[in-house]
Image (cartoon, rainbow, N blue to C red):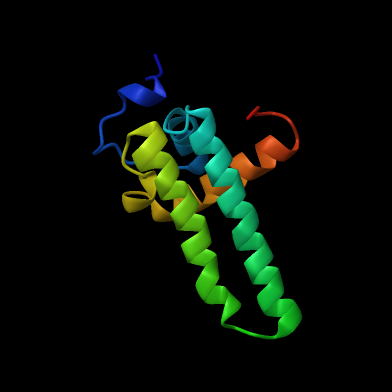
Length: 110
């Protein structure tokens, strides 16, 4: 029988993103936290595009500040949990992008 995403212990290691994403979504159950993640991801995309469009790499410094700033406020203030980025940085980045996609296509509601 499969474990629920919330019942996974911190030392659990995910072998594939498909295993991680349900855990990621469970860690983002608060609507405001999800909204802040979507806003942060959108700002990361905008700053990267601005860096390319203006040919000014300084915009790239704003990308992690925007992304992590909004996401961490969501976790520490609203979700009251520790961001998965600290333990699963690459899967968390993919999770942010998947959440952004899922909100845009209407699979996940804000």
